[in-house]
Image (cartoon, rainbow, N blue to C red; front, side):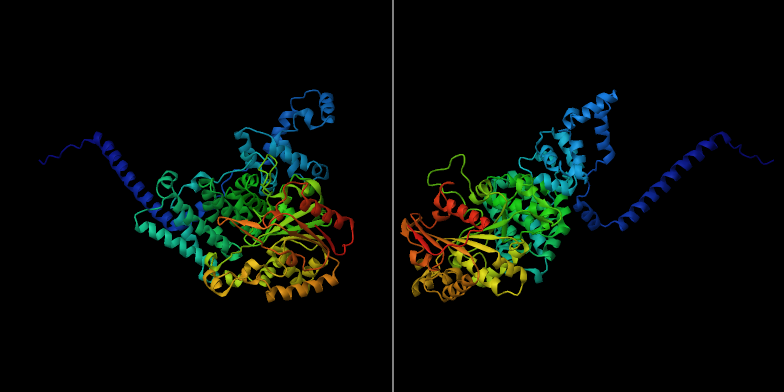
Length: 634
């Protein structure tokens, strides 16, 4: 009889359990692997990188949170009569006068009763010293429009602005490589000659040092050891190239799309002591701010806090660049003009000044009754030509931009502008090969007219101040505008009421007149060629401008230098403008004063003759005083 083995049923559950456990683990691992492959195919690395660059990850504090804060204050009052009596005394009795949530509620409200309180609420919110944690909560609650207004408030608490998210600032590549890659992504059709010039030199210097095994890494400690000057030089050249390109919409779009704003933020923070680099960064942002479609990207990249900081800078070039960028992003101010690369707003830079509060909502324009425009001369700049004279030293009241600081204090309701352009003495010192084409006085005048039109100059009376070559440029742009068929440019001439000419060489300068061997060696620039004594360009311009003066009632005041100028480092004295050349117009007043060519545009103080004569000229235009006939004083 066959015997069968007895099955041990008691071990079967354990065997089945182990089989199920291992089988489930294998199936789960397989499913995880499949899901990982599926998601990897759906989300590419490039897509994740683009999402990473957006920086749109700020937390929004909702309106109910603000309401809850205010209700929490009111809930402390149990007696209704006590509450009503307290409310009648105003927000200060409730402790709401500095409560940020109450101030935010007022600033975000469009009710007429709240609109009157906006200036006071804005100043209080901006200047109250809240702790860092609360300040960041307030920053989260501020939208783009309100943040711009805060940035344009004097002495603003800088903690009220958000920095870029930390993970976006992690350096994935060296700064010079990042700038190089952005420039490579801009199509050749958009490349300007100057931008290509700076780009090529930067690449050559970078390549040279890498061949010498000096790898330029974006690390503060390394930069301090391995040729920091070379790094600064390379970054400056790349920024110069980007500055040239950022004036067009297409190039600005490509720059923003490829993360330039965050790179500029890193440069401005890492090189915060290098004014040249920070000013270049601010000017690039100012150029991009011309295009409203990029305003929120500027906001999200943390630039409003930097611009607010730069607006308080002691350096005029940095201060004015930041002011331009912020004003271009202020929606109220864009209604009457924006400022491109050639124009800087000198006043009003701040939101909380009296002039900026006088906004006519029916007309959509500011109630300024005059524009005052300054035009610098050869080798000048809006950031340094108009500084106060330091012949008597620099005291606590010294200013590096007297039109910005003095005029608004003495004459209210002015908009003050400065025209800026690049010049050189020789083609050897030219900034780029394209300077020869762009340096003619006629070409410059046409470009400046486009900038003035964008800024809305010509809609109200205009007083012009021109120093040296700036006076020549001023005459040319008025002549060009008078010939234009554009009604806005015609209005610019019609609304020109007065000119203050500071040592303007109407007939040219003997200093610019060189003999043939000297011209061959020095290769004088186009602007120097046009300023030489007896220049046909200046001769024709004088005839056209005198004809213009015969058709328009424009007051002309000429101030002429009588002292020679000491030229350093050679230690020789030169007479840049002869008296007979400076009063060649034979129109208006002529004053001869004992100063040299550099100091004639730099008053010693507010009692200086030049400054007081400008005050008198502006007041005379405002009061409708007629232009005077030819008067000479010594």
